[in-house]
Image (tube, rainbow, N blue to C red; front, top):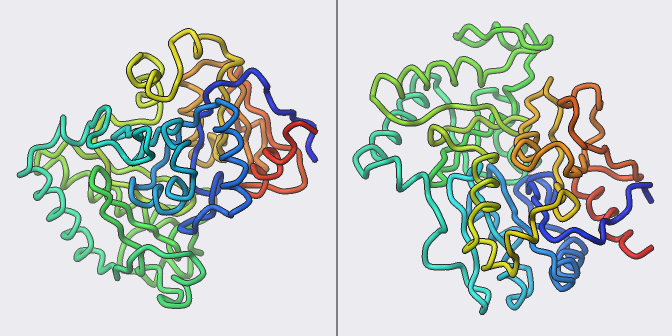
Length: 323
C-alpha cells in the first residue's frame, strides 16, 4: 500500500481513462468498477476526460457502473471536444453540454476531413485495422510499421501506430519516407502528422494533428484541449448541478483531485493539461512511474508509490480508502 492517502474532502475527480481506469481497448476490471461505484455512492462526482471516443468509454466503463449512480458522471471524450452527462435513470443525455465538433465544422467540412484522412492513408500505404487490444492486434497484423488501428470517433479520428512509433534506424530506413530521429528512436507518426497538417491547411479545415498516448496519432478539432473542457465544466453551474455539485463545491483545491498517468513533459505529458486547468495546488496522482524532474514546476503532481502502477495502481489506491 502506498503512502498517498485518500482525500476525504474531494468532491470532484478529473480522471484520464486509458491505462488509468482501464487498459487500452479493454473494459475496466470488475474490481475497478466496484471501487468506482463506492466512490460515486459516497457523493463524489467523476469527470472522465480522455482522447478515447464516447462509445468506447461507455462500453468499457460507464455501462458497467450502476445506472442509479451514472448521473454523478461526466464524459469529456476526444480530448474534451464534447462533454456528456447522464439522466437520473442512467441513460446518456440526448445531447452534449457542449460540442466543439458541431460548433466548428459544417457537414461539408466533416466529409472533406474524412477524404483528407483517407488520402493520408493512401499516400503512406497504411494498412487499416479496427481497434482491439494491443496483443490481439499484434497477432493479426504482425510487426509491420504500416499496420495501424484506425477509429473514426466523430470529433476525432485516431491512428494507433503500434509498430511504428519506436522504430530503430534499420527499421526506419526500410520505409520509403523520411523519418526524423526523436530521443534515439524513429517515429512514423511524425511524417504522417506533418503531411496531414499540410493537407488540413490546404483544404481550409479547422483540424490539427497531435501525438497522444503511447503510440496514438489523433486528428482533432482545432482549439480543443482537456484544459478547456475542464474549465468549461468548472465554470458552468448547470453542468455541475447535473452531478450534484455547486460552484462553491469546486472552489477549493482540496475539493478536486486528478487521476492520470502522463505528466512527463519529455514524453508528451498530455495529462498535465488537467493540472493546468485547475491550478498548481490541486493534487494530481500520477499512476505511471515517471520522473518528477520531468514534470511542470510548481504543480502538485505526486507519483503513486504503491506496489502497482497504471490502472492497477489506481485500483490499489482506491482499495486503500479507509485503511
